[in-house]
Image (cartoon, rainbow, N blue to C red; front, side):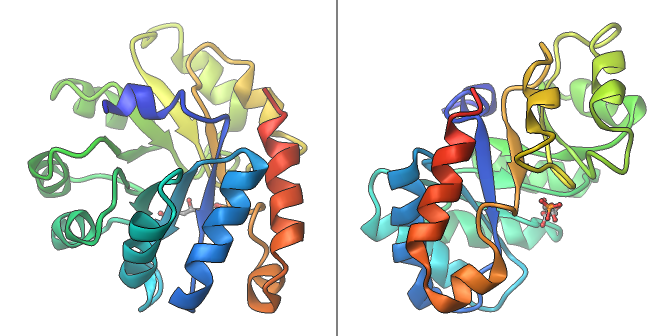
Length: 206
Ligand SMILES: O=C(O)C(=O)C[C@H](O)[C@H](O)COP(=O)(O)O
């Protein structure tokens, strides 16, 4: 799968922070049941790689990836755990090389025209726009589409059920990402029905 194709699999990519790897499988099943098969597990917790491993092994309909790829080593570690894509909040030359070396599709984070152009020089045309709302929101991305129509984005950061359509209506947006599908209290309480419901509403956004 190419990164461009990843952007078209689902309108919303849930960004998940998981403390307990035991929650990974029921959580992923709830998201898939609600219609959101692409799941980004952030490497912000100790259990993140174990969570990715479990989802990859036990939820065949999910497309699980690793988020918060910050160190070059994170890319290979995530690939070994079974991640099928990689997402980073920003990008450096070393990080791009490490993500490229895994042969997995990846969405490097950018928040400016220059950052996007630096990646474009290396043939990267699918990116995460982060932090989307704080960096200028949908008007900013709309403005980038004029000079840089070959780049498509997954805006993430401050995106919600209520503002997602502003992004999804843009020609250079494939999908959006966000943590609103998996509220911390719902994950802690194992309220998978609530998460499935949130996913279903988000899946209907497009
Ligand atoms: O962890 C990463 O890799 C990030 O870059 C940040 C996340 O994508 C955002 O924290 C999600 O944003 P919210 O939906 O506003 O919570």
